[in-house]
Length: 441
Image 1 (cartoon, rainbow, N blue to C red):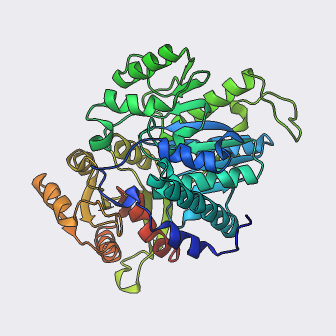
Image 2: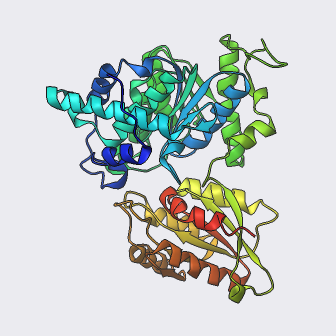
Image 3: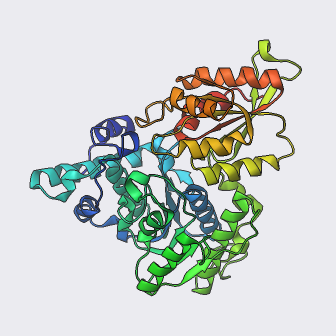
């Protein structure tokens, strides 16, 4: 039956009636693929209409997906990308041919999936338990099918084995890295988390990772690959490689593999050449930059705070685990145009390792302002974070309102000639990014 026209806000309002675990405590989270598989069946199995590269890992998933998408587009393929969470608007999650999905296409797909959800409720089948993330994921797959795409790069939402995205067959399964996160769902050791994330690997696929075979989590990945008879591709990088260098090397490894399997460039001067790392030229890498990942702004200071300069450098990165904030701060230290004291503006979800994260931050930041990512529903309070920080002998403030917290950070940075790092949460980045980008000097 033809779908009646509707705008995206109407579709999202209907969608928001469902449980959204991205914004709720996750200790009692429903896990399982049955609801998603039921929706897929009712929708004609849109997840089988394209070839997929599936990406899991603690950090770097989004950037690796964006790089993969940009390289395949450069090769002339019709490519989509599914990501989460979004920073500014939900359309960011669904990329078609390198652009955010149009409102009308996303609204139509959401309504179609929600109608299937209602049918599942009436029939009392597994789809009646579908969540917000199940539906938005299914809608993305409907969009990709309707756009006639060749390849889709699919980012895992949480974990891997039981994630809604795991209905796809990823010809290449990428596990970027493994750190402690979502421990109440995924397990309390890197090995346990690795078992969940490598759950995206299926018979007939190839695994690509940065993790060495002798690494504790890397051994888990290798064991699962051996059980399934899958080849494993590993990067070989120096220990001081930057985040960007690591991501490029991992995607280059995947492209080399695809080229060896016979995948070629479809158009342009290189038509017919095997796909390879050479696709990741600087202009392609630049197209793959995502909001809130090592994103730099020159924030205009209010006149009252201009003490010899009109702007303050401000970096935004959604790093939320200790090893990643360490890498972010290391890479920022290499930038010639960011210097002075670091004033950190931080929010962290309650399922993150706050003491570990702040211990790393304390070695680099001279002052911190703690806030709360509005609407996350599962955040450490600003005061909790402030107490941990002060117990480390560090100076800081606690301000629940992100915009007021930003004002405090600006005052501190202007006093000491420093720079600001907004970190710990992509929800915090999303809450402040429009304000920051609207006052670029």
